[in-house]
Image 1 (cartoon, rainbow, N blue to C red):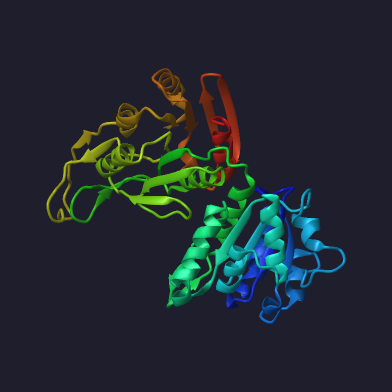
Image 2: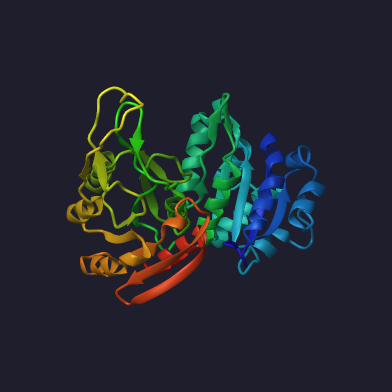
Length: 376
């Protein structure tokens, strides 16, 4: 989706070896619809040639401030840019921005952007020992106190490596979204449960968690504080691991109790039944009867615990009557889909609210955006 359509991003590049990743980053931002203007320090131009970023952005890279006063043109009052993205940001540049020092193209753009009050995202990259320096930590804290979004690096091989491209793009999308969900605590259950039959086998579904992922990432883009209870790991959110229906219920109730929840999205294929558990491995080769015991509904437990705004999912087009009953029981939105959507990248969904019914077809990212639009 073109989530950055109509937005201009100034990609400010400083002299870290991670500058070699900015060609890929520029392409990723443009694929999401952004117009990208590269700005480079002299040190950055010694690592990646300005022509490479000119090619990646389709616009001449700015490597010095000229009589066109480019910093004002883009980041001054009424400027063209919607976001200043400093990636990578060296310890040197972070310190200069924190102290209001303007002696490079990037720091001049940063001072202008901060004076205007426009969104700024900073993506540190340096050796880990530099990242741990108390002065660097203090400078990053100062940037955060000014409302700058600082994306924590990945600590690998004693280096504070730049965050991955997908994470940076998500933060860019969040920065320019207007953050309509800012301050909201969103809890999402996602993916399949796996109920053990014995020490080897489980009873599960074909759910992959793709829908839950897109709902979680869209909530992040919109500014929410997002927690996902599932068996996987999504970027930019708090991941809480759970593999069974009982584990999922314990986890979501713990989040309700400890942090509170404003919006709960039950996107997981939570088990309706659990098999009678056998110790060890059931021998193969002989017929076996498995007794299934019904499990309590997690969505009901969450509603009783913290009364959040609730988005429920119901599988099966023949379940529309039950979906309407769920609205009457307190759900704000019920999303009805059919079995072929499980594990698929696209699908057809029916979004039901007290105000009416809306059919949506397309990618699960598009469906996630449609679901959130019902709550904004």
